[in-house]
Image 1 (cartoon, rainbow, N blue to C red):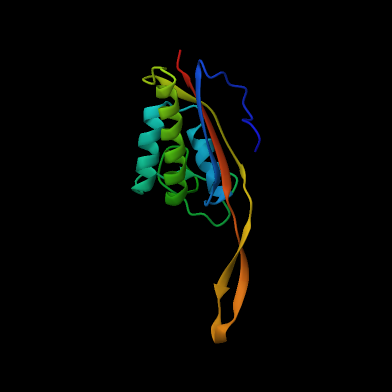
Image 2 (cartoon, rainbow, N blue to C red):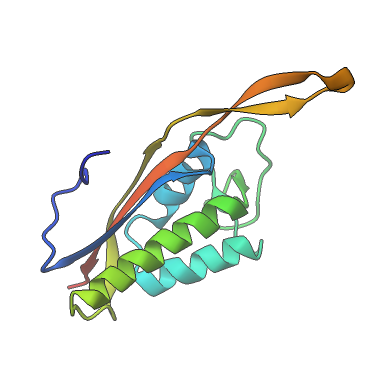
Length: 150
């Protein structure tokens, strides 16, 4: 990831990026899709509700064998707590970057939020009799750009 995939100007935008976060790229994609276009405070409260397991995230693409959830226009959904924590940290970082640039962050909206697959690294799964099986661990890159709501 060299630069942002969204052309932003530091005078009117606030941006942050999480690099190789140890979360599922599939869950990160679904959470990012749910957050796109939300206001900053609404997005923070939404992620807090996901962490508390009171608000599910709708899974639209990666919905194989995912149970149905109650709610308006909700067919299948999950509670990706680890992913919500990671995205909340990146979102707060973007808000802090906007405050550092002396931009008022009262009415900010998520203009761009994207995720991509990070590096995979090999881990070991312990087995019987002193053996171990290799397994792949995935990571995700997340970028967020905020802009003042007009």
